[in-house]
Amino acid sequence: MRKAVQRLILRDQNLVRLQANLAEPLEQVLRVPLIDGHLVEDVALTSSPLQLEHKLGRAYRGYLCTKANGQLYGLYDASDTNTQPERYLVLTYSGSATKASFWVF
Image (cartoon, rainbow, N blue to C red; front, top):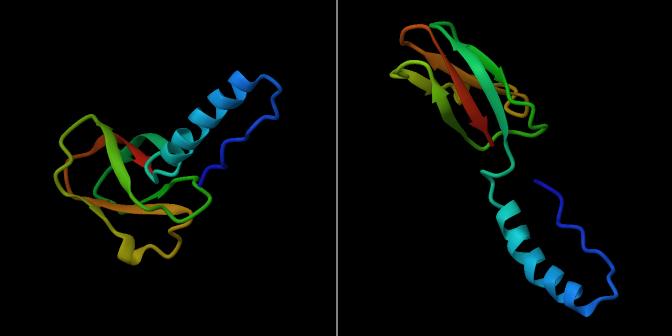
């Protein structure tokens, strides 16, 4: 999870109010799990199981396909065989070879 918004010590009361009004809504947005992710681009998908290094530094919570150069019928999460979810997203794919990009969060 991302760090909280750093609050500055300010003398101008207008800036203090502005900071107070912006900090909490921004912190709420930053707490959304989907925001704290990593884009992994141009992954070659073949019929072989794929260990995709997500670089989150923690176990992933989910993923979204953000771009595909073909149809992704037959793309499955193989998390039941993943022994290192803090490092990898494991996918199986049974379609024709293609490339795709994933947002892992």
